[in-house]
Structures are given as C-alpha cells and as structure tokens.
Image (cartoon, rainbow, N blue to C red; front, top):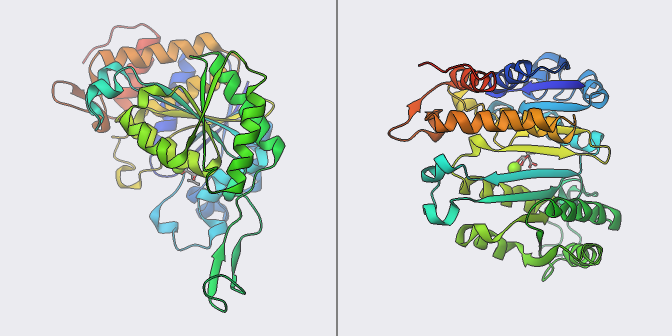
Length: 362
Ligand code: IPM
Ligand code: MG
C-alpha cells in the first residue's frame, strides 16, 4: 500500500502529521513518501505541482492531501497559484468522483447555526463531478467582444460543458453509493436555463432506469441551496456538476457546524484516490497548533476504505473519533462551554490513544 503524502500549506502540515500518527498506530504496513505541493512547492521549485510530486501521486495507491493556498500567492499568475496543484492532480489522475459527506455528529449538534432539530442525525453525501464542467471547459480567456451587449468591449469567458460519458459515469457512482445507503438520489441541475444541465438531467434519468431500486429526483440548484438549509435531512445522496458541487458542498459542510470535521475523497475509475479535509489551509491559524485534525484523520479512514481495501481499519479510526468527541475533547473550532479545549497535537494523541484502547488521561 503506497501512500503519497502531500501536506501542502498553512495548517496542512500540522493536520497531516496527526493523520500519519493515526495511520502508524494501525498494525498495517504502508509505504509513505512525502512531497511538496501548493505554495510550499512554488517556493521551493517555482511550481505548485512539480513533476516529481505529480509522479509520486500517480504511482501511489492513494494520496493523503492537506490543504493549499495563502493570500500571499493571490497576485501570482493563475497557473502558478497553489489552487492549480489540486486542479492539476484532479485532472492528471482523472479523479472525477468527489465524495463529500456531511455528517452531523451527535455531540456537535449545538455547533451548527441551524436549529438542532433540523440537523440532529444529518447524514448526507454530496457526490460532485470533479474533472469537467466550467472548471475545465475550453475555450476560456479574455478577448474583445464581437457581439453581446457591448461589442468592442473587453470580455472574459469560460465554457460550461459535459460529455455523455462524463455524466454517465458520475451518475453510476451516485446510484451505486445510494444502494449502500437509503437508496435515494437527488440530481441537482439548472435544466431550466442551461443546455449543459438539461443534457445532464436527461442522462441521469436514463442511467437511473438501470437502478429501479433507487429513487431519483431532480432539483434546480437554487432550490437545492434553499432546501439544504430548510430541510437538510430530506437529502440522502446528492449528485451534481463540478461548480454546483463546489458551492453546495461548502453549504452542506456548514450545516454540521464544523467544516473541521469533514473528510473528502476524490476517486478515479481505478479507485485510486486523493483524500483531503473539506476545509482549506487556514493561514490565519497556521503554526499555532490549534487546527482541528479530525477531518484529515477521517480522510485517512476514507482512504483505507475506498482505495486501500482496509474497511476494519477505517472503522477503528471512525469509532476512535466518536470516542474522543464523547470524551468531550474539542479543538477551538468546535469548542463549546462544558467541553475540554485541546490543540491539534492533543487531539491526535487522543485519537491514537482511543485506537490503542489505552486509558486517556488529562
Ligand atoms: C474545493 C476548493 C477548490 C475547488 C479550489 C481550491 C480550487 O474550493 O475543493 O472545493 O474549487 O474545487
Ligand atoms: Mg470549494
């Protein structure tokens, strides 16, 4: 089992370190190799995704990724910005299926900005198509307009596009995931306005006929954004395109009150995957030892389950996380009165201890 470890920038290095300690606690043998990515790679090698990092990722069974980005790189030309590393990995590894679960942990119900009764027991899975849509569609750029409202003016444009196979394969992923859950899929589109998403809706409907046991419904993205805060528990699996999925998955994450808790997986057709917390590099708290490592630790659990075929080890990590929450340990982002505030390292220690079933002190 070969794991490429790409901690990246900001809190990335601190949280990935804890996930690695947790992995080391399991009695499994991994071959782990680290490389620079994002701003850290730009500083050292002049590129956010150096050849050697990409090669390491391609050759691994799984990539454990921290986070990239810092405001100080905002002035760089787009191709050199840290975000290009994650887009480049998605593209080069063909990681088209992004799983973003939004689970509200029992102990964290009070952390959400929504009323507890709306989110208690929330467990939804957003499946976001990750290598198509307006993110990667060509052509894109800037030019002088020849038509439109202001011919002769400067304009910028991107291209929203999906091919049939791209929609088919993500639809299959969603229906198969739903079969392992409550057998419901909501496909989110904008078919009332966009040709691309009428096409999306038609194809998801066709693919759905192969899964008569799974209930499929369709929702426009604006309504989905509203329903997510109105009655989030009505959703089970949500499948959508790259851009809508970007937006809705942040919204869904915040329902749980704790983006610091949410892992994600991005898989290709061969089950090779990139695993990362759903949150970013948080440069404001980097190096302070206060970041929540649980999303990364839970991403490592997803990695064990999806790419490394070690479901038991994944279960052990996930129950250890529930155990530390039940003990009342909280990093600052999820802290509330009556619980114990801990730092990144202490949280990692507690998970390690829960896995090894050692008594926890302090
Ligand atoms: C995400 C992020 C990325 C995206 C950025 C960093 C390129 O927001 O993973 O959701 O837009 O996909
Ligand atoms: Mg995003």
